Image (cartoon, rainbow, N blue to C red; front, side):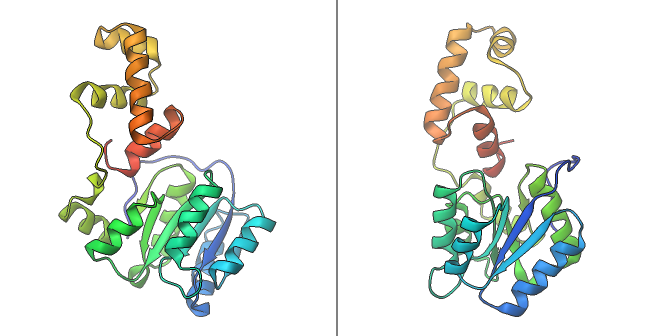
Length: 219
């Protein structure tokens, strides 16, 4: 079974798109998602081209995408989706979990990675719950590999001790004034740190920064 980051309650159902050029696999995963009763509707697409059309014509909140497909590859598709639909939750699906593949997938900043050959009904249910709850999901074997090769810290961005302290406090819901009081800094200084963190991580606001921290194992 995969690994979740924390417990939470799912409050709103969403639509999901499953993209895989192997029809049997695609339909099987879609059926498992439907059986969870956690989502409103599940769409299937057997190519990147069809996936783009589905997303353009339907409201989709989560996309599970096979990384290796003919035509528009899964990696290229996920890169395009990340750029054009920043609110879309993306789960990369792969049959390979060697270092090069994991680095490539992590560079897309997915909301999760599923190892297809070990994915069963329980993994699918936990994955959907986790993603809907705003957390990151990795299949257990994927997570083990990431820890072994230290890819959870794959980002080349370096953070100072003070920046890490501020990130931790932001993740706890602290606002600038509260952080300033706790760290005995001026609010202006804290705000300067926050802006620098946004610049370093290429995020636009504190929620995106916190999501970045989760994706990169910084929390």
